Image 1: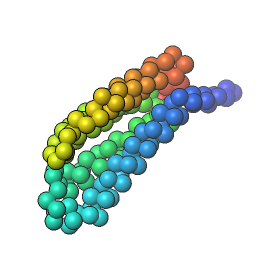
Image 2 (image 1 turned 90 degrees about the horizontal axis):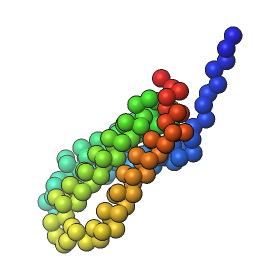
Image 3 (image 1 turned 180 degrees about the vertical axis):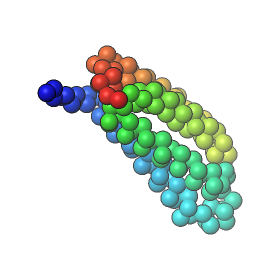
Length: 141
């Protein structure tokens, strides 16, 4: 009788999962606030509008939580989901920044935000491709 030992989740993967969970929670908060403040957003003629904010929040919320669960469970699809999600989040963040800031300068602080964006992507890709972390995902279905 063979007892299969459960592999311990690497600390970096735990932190990455918590990061994606945080993004997911913020997405659902955006969704909830768009619904709660719908009338105010319409009254203020907010651009791009409450529907855009609600759908975007639900997408970010769902994807963030899905990736967090996949990483925490050690799913084989976890690394690929994390890589795709971080690229999706960064792309939509920069698109949001361009289309939603029509009063003022959407490019204020862009150098530091670009550095943070690249760091988030780099850290995600590095953590899920490190040999020790990769082995964690290969040991799970």
